[in-house]
Image (cartoon, rainbow, N blue to C red; front, side, top):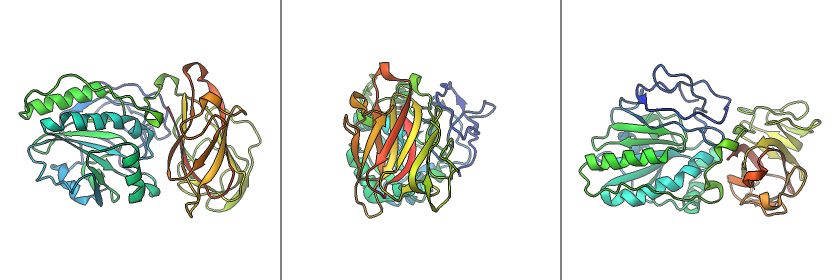
Length: 382
């Protein structure tokens, strides 16, 4: 578990969180009220946003945090980058992991900045620091980089060497590094993109770049990368593995690491969920042992996502989604059709519900798996 944040900077402002994550115990800055977030988890359920902060150092970070780049286990889209090679350049270091919905919604902006400001000397480095064990798989990371059209260098940080070098505790987290290798500013969470881009422009000009544009990018994300409707989110990121699970209502509670038949006897209240069928609940995920098992969740948000993986042998698992007992129709997500039918073919985040603005409310989601072996990790919302 990551340690408490204790930065000494002075934040400009803090945007209120829509979510109420269960690990709301960390302090953002010196003398400031506690800000809800998930340390060494993801920043919020669907859009916890912290404003850009300037000055001072990150307590616990190395004096030369870019030195930690030497700890990357692999590099994608680039030969290995070093602190020495980056000396004199403005560097944006962005921590992400590919099943994090907040990271995925932020990524179109990071990619746009990388392309727009490369001619002016900006170097963008995406540091992929895994949350779940499957996110250490290099092939999975490579698929995500291709799926989301990421072209800037990606340092694979499976050992958390870079994470620790920056004393980072958040996904996503952006660090704005000056030419002397020192952190000038940082931003935790998604959002606040205009201010972040203005910061990049100012740093590039201060570094001697000429004719730096002063306009702003406005990328339009699609699918799971669409910007969240923060005003509609009233459901928290919810983990299924027993180490971090909450609001689980299947009769008898969770049986750890052993097959068990689960039943939901009462209809879930808002943000309650449960399993039906024979499952084995592990520390990170629940694995279905027999066909026909299901997961039910009563939620309030525009979008519902579920991080899933296929059977251990890689065999795809078909599923059927219902919303309030009916096929989702026009409210289906990008990973199922109007009848709610889809397939788990890889270890990643699946968008299963995407509602129109007039349909957002409390809804009962259910996903039934037509064959065994699927693993379910966490729900997120947007």
